[in-house]
Structures are given as C-alpha cells and as structure tokens.
Length: 424
Ligand SMILES: Cc1ncc(COP(=O)(O)O)c(C=O)c1O
Image (cartoon, rainbow, N blue to C red; front, side, top):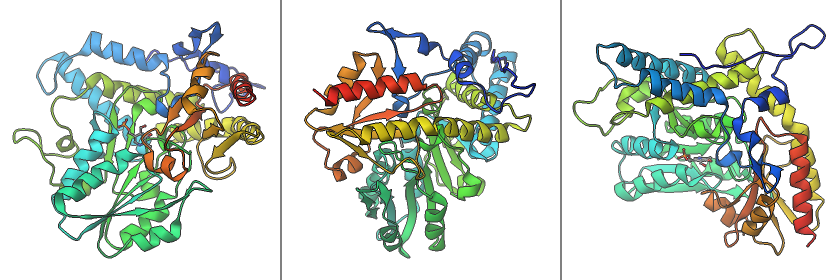
C-alpha cells in the first residue's frame, strides 16, 4: 500500500542533513494552512492530540477505498486486510522496540488499560497491593482503583513533589512492599512534561515480583519508547498523540500476554496478541497508526533500519526544539503574574509546559489566545491529582506543547499573546 510519502531532502554541502528541515516537515501537514481570525493557526494542543501528516490520511483512505474487508477470508481484499494489519503490527513493534506478536490494538489507551487491569485482576486477591502515582493521568489510575474496589485490593499512591513536578523516589521505595502485585507508572506527565525513569522504578517493582505497566501516551510523541530498555511487562500509547489517528496500542511481553486470563468471547482467537483485541478492529485506524510511525521514521535521513530511524527522528526533533522550549520557559518565567509548573528545560522532560496567570482563569487565557489564531488547552487534562496538588483544581492550568511542526515565529506569537494577557 503506497503512503504517497515524499522524503526528498535538500542537500547541504553535498550531504543529506540528518533530519527533514522544519519547512519540509511542515509541508506534510495540511492543517497548518488553516487560518483563524486572519492569522495562520499555531497549534500548541499537541499533548491533547497532534495534527496529522498527509501520508497518514492517504494510507487510511487507500485502505478504505481499495482494500476494505473483514479478516481471515479467502479473497483478495480480505487477504490484503490481514497483510495490512500484520504490517502495522510490525511497524508498531519497531516503535516500541518489541516484536509483532507483542502488539495489540484497541479503541484507545484508557480502554486497553481497563481491559488489561481486569485480566490481571482475575488472579489477584484481597490484601494484594497496586502502586500508582500522583504524576499519572487518571487513565493509569482509574482502571486500577476500579479493580481495587471490585477485588478488595489496596491502592498505594506515590507522591509527587509539587515544587519540582517530579516523583518522590523515597516515597516510591516505601510504597513498594512484598504485597505489591502491579506498579502502574507513567513515562511522562501530560500535564507537566516530567519524564520519569521508569526503568529504575520497574527494577524496584520487579524486585518484589510485581508486574510493571507503563503509560507511554505522552512520552511516545517526544522520545523513543523502548520496552527492552525499560524492561516493563506492559506499556500503552495512543497514535493520535504522535501524528496518527485515534487508536490505542498495547505492548505486552510475549509470555505475559500469553499467560493473561483475558475476558473474551469463546470463539475469538486465543493466541497472543489477538486475545487482547475484542471484536472487529478499527482496520483503517491500525493502518493509520502504522503510517504515522513510518512518517516519523521518514523524518530521519539515516539509511539504517526503521527502528534506528524512529529513534534518530524523535531524538533529532527533540534536540531541534530544545532551544525553542528553553526560550519559552525563560520568557514565561520572567513574567511577574505568571507561574510556570514542572521541571526546568534542562531536566528530563518533554516540551510541554503548564502555567497560570494570576487573576485570569485558564479558560480566559486560551480564549484570548484563540482570538490570535493560537490554539492551546486548559483544565486538568485528566491529570487531576497533579492539578490538585498544585493548588489549581478550581481554575485549571493552561498547557502549551511543542510538536515537530512548531516554529520560532509561532513561539514568539505565543509569548507575545501571553505577555499581553498578563499585562492587562
Ligand atoms: C499521559 C496520558 N495517559 C493516558 C491518556 C489517555 O489516552 P487515551 O485518550 O488514548 O485513552 C492520555 C490522554 O490524554 C495521556 O495524556
């Protein structure tokens, strides 16, 4: 299936640059042509969902128009569907640094996590403990607390440090006990951008025989997910956060997936990973998720394999936006009525920032920005505990995230807009 992807790069001194240029990256996103209030729209809403390159839309349309069928039948479009799903599993396996049998698709991360929690819970009993963290999105808290209610399991929650926006590691060590059965932890906070060392946390949990589940939803758009490095048992992310369509992806270590007591209908396949997938899948979404990963890989000029190109593209894009993010942080921190939350730019973090303007509700800030064609988000983003711990539960915070298509000019417009709001 053609993705219609153009990967032409300008040469510099006869050599291909390591990454597509900023202009080339932007030329792939039709949404960047949108005008609002006489301004070209600047999208800072990536942590809520990024824009989509043309190749993703084309791959999905091509699937629906030319190959659309149900699976496992003996005619060409059905066989093509089987092949397309397998190809996407292989592509997502490269994204996670896993194998295709370890990749399952589902509606979104939240639904997949509820399903996984239920399966794990069937083998837990009263007195067992699950460790969650205050730094997590509630999609990685609610499935576990629901399980705890149903099976009389205890939840132990690891504190965050409001001043730094980081996890309290001493508290994590205290919360993991010989009764811990699961550690559910996020690789990056969608509210603050904090990146957490999930490998280190996982080692602590594995030492007491617990399973480790990593929420990689926010992390995946900014840094290469590496389940081998993390040595986690399960991880999940969502393609709409990394330039793809609205679909979730679950990684499970091969033996763990095979061993789960998954709630499923009797005639459905019992082999991993299919046993994690209930009913007919979102075929076009699966194809789109694969196309999104292929698009990310195409940003890197390397001749290496796809995994290596995914890694170099994400690392290269992060390095490219580092000075922009540092400028944003510095400009916002200098404003007298503004409070910026989370770790500073030189700490492990994504390029997502949250802040409040004294005396101006977050919703008013984003409304004012939208009038300038600047799209940012407000609220608690379901990272409800973080926002409570920051004392901002009533008004929420404003969140601005940099993506691969963010330019210095857009950033200057954002800073000017916030300065104007804060000076009223
Ligand atoms: C860190 C994080 N985890 C989980 C989720 C939930 O993902 P989904 O919308 O795919 O259920 C989100 C969505 O914003 C998120 O940012």
